[in-house]
Every structure is written in C-alpha cells, then in structure tokens.
Amino acid sequence: MPFTIVRNDITKMEVDAIVNAANNQLKQGGGVCGAIFNAAGAKNLQAECNKIGFCRTGGAVATKGYDLPASTIIHTVGPVWNHGKDYEEALLRNCYINSLALAKKRKIKSIAFPLISSGIFGYPKDQALEVATEVISDYLKQNDMDIYLVVYDKASFTISQKRFSAIEKFIDENYIKEHFIARESLKLPQYDIEAYSSHSVVSDLQDALELEDLLDDLGDTFSEMLFRLIDKKGMTDVDVYKKANIDRKLFSKIRSNKHYQPSKPTAIAFSIALELNYDETQDLLRSAGFALSRNNKFDIIIEYFISEKSYNIFKLNETLFAFDQPLLGA
Image: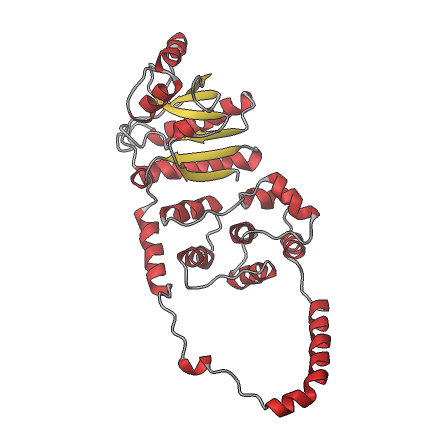
C-alpha cells in the first residue's frame, strides 16, 4: 500500500528509511528522538550527527541507520507550537516535503514517519495529522513510494473532533446491533412427496438447464466492470490506482487478469477513487462477491463518506484507523 497508518514502534519498522523528529542541534533527545538514538546505537549516531552539526526547522538531513532495520535515518526538525503565530503549519509542511525530497534523492523506496511535532513540541495532534496526510497524498500523486505514518499508541493519534463526532453519530443511528429472524421465516416449505417423486427426473433436468442458463448469463467480472467504469469516467489507470491507494504492480495484475478476485477493502478503494455513489458502489462490490451492510462499523463508515461525497481515501483511512477498522488500498 503506498500510504498507510500503522500502530508500531518506528525503530522496528523494516523500511529503507525512518524519520527522526530531531532538534536543531541534532542531539539525542527524548521521545521518538531518544528511542531512535538508543535503537540505532547512540554513540555512532551522535558522532555522525555532530559532523553535520545543525539542521534548520523544517529542514532535513540524513545519516546511516546503524543498528536499526532501516539503513537510513532522515532527521527533520519540526516547529514548536505557538498557537499558529510563528508559521508553524508552513514549517511542519516543509518537514515532510524536505524529508520526502531527500528520500527521493537517495532512491529510497519505503519510508516511515512519526507524527512530527505532535509530542513535546505541542503541535495539536489532529492538525499535525491533517498536515502530514495532505503533504504525503500530494507527493504520491506524482511519485511512487511506500510511506508509513507510525503511531505508537492510540493516544498519539487524533482526527478532528468534528469529524469523529459526526461519524460516531452516523454509526449510532445506523448500526444494526441485533438481528432477529421471525420464527415463521424459519419454517421449511412443505412438499408433496409422491408428486415430487413422479416429476423428479423432469425437474432435475429442468434445474440443470436453468443452472446452465444462469452460468451463461453471468455479469461482468470485477475487473471487467472496473475498467468499464474507468473508461466511462474518462480517467487514466494512473489516476485511478493513485487515488485508490493501490500499488502499481497490483493494479497491473488486475488489468491483465479479468478473473482477479480482490479483497473487499481493495474493491471499495476503487469505488472511492472512481467517486461512485452508493448504488454504483454496491454494483461494483457485487461483481466481486461483496456488499455494504449496516451490521458492521467498517461498512457504515464507508457509507458515511460516500453519502457526504467525500472521496479522499487518505482522510477516509485516517477515520477507519481511529475507529480500529481495516484500511483501504492494497
């Protein structure tokens, strides 16, 4: 998946590079910075950082990863929050922009970020998340890279209270917690055994012919419907797989195999990329053997975003993560 949010220890991420939320002097600090220094081997990492000497706020520099699974550490200095009075948002954007530019220059294929400045620097977590998501999604429109946003625990991650409350209310109003089946609906149909026996051979033959007709009349496969919709919307393949947060290699597999069977999150990701309405989404899902229902939160959150005509898959994934649901894409 090109961009995903994960709950993990960033020092354990098996990627080409991890990003350190550093200070201007590139000294070992606390929080994420201290954990990275300790895991990498503080003596060797500090010695290389001392040679670099300084990093401006919003800038980025790189060192070796030493004892980390990642071969490279990109150090960036986030702004200290001062209620937006000191151009904090622009500086925070530069942290991500410059880190990604440096990663691209070094031919890095996968990178993991912490939520920069959201710890001891005091940047509000929901606003820090908005900046990270916007910059990363803009970058991926023109570039290919596997990007992870790593949060250590649930307390480190917050979407806007307005969005959270709206979706929580929508779930409360639509979530079917219990399913009652009327006893009458469980009664089996009554058959005339003697009549059934006399006509069983004819009936079996008719059933076989009807089944053959049904199999001959199957609708489009998922892949056939997907590419018909792409053409109908006038979109390019690149537009679609990037908006769907789908890896280019996987998309090529779907393009070359008309019987490709996607997972449900992958199928929904394409419906979001194509900006399908609820009925169109259900049609695409049915072609893959799925459907949206009211008996699980994942489906209701998807329905909420579609009903709001909100088709930014990265913001949708933020919300799914906040509600402990699977993310979209592949």
